[in-house]
Length: 77
Image (cartoon, rainbow, N blue to C red):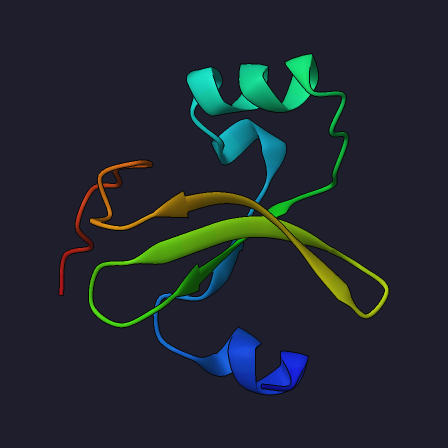
């Protein structure tokens, strides 16, 4: 997929460093990963991948098969 299509897909959005759960932010720091934001890409209803984009390359950092790896509160409709 092209990046433009990914950014518009459901469950795909960026997270700023202050929005990242502390546990995961600490993991980034331990690994020396310094990024402006982490991008979440939904792979269906539950699976998610998290990573960052540098130029034309998306670097995968985490994979969450059941959307429990990085839990979020459901949005109110």
